Length: 159
Image (cartoon, rainbow, N blue to C red; front, side):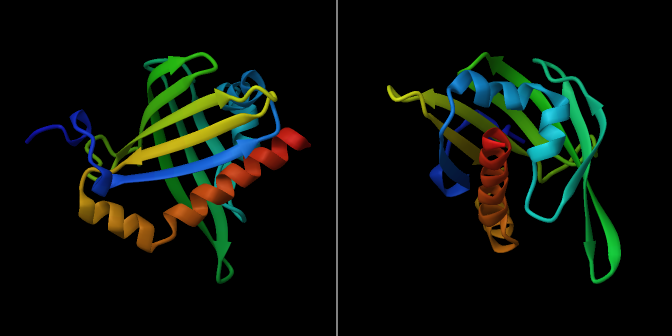
């Protein structure tokens, strides 16, 4: 089976963009610091519990998103495998569960574009393995959750 991440296709992609009132060096640094990531990453109402954080090319961040739903704690295991890190410009990672052959993992490219006024345009591109999987994640709120994550980063940077 061909690697779905070797070709780009708009019907498998989700693109989220946020203008942040901070220079790109500061925005990029928030992604490189595991303690900072655990403070701002994820949708509203969920906390992060880090199990392993080696944020460099070839490294991984293994964590649980933890929340309470209908009075019960739920954990959502996550794994990011960092494929490329270009300081202050780009981070490329595969994102999914810690399962070695997670069929739903997707490729994420985060770019940091500084404007002349010192603000940063943060763009997160998700490339899913199939059009059908993209529709599933949109259906359960991936766009809203991604935007909440970007809002959380903005609030953390402003803090």
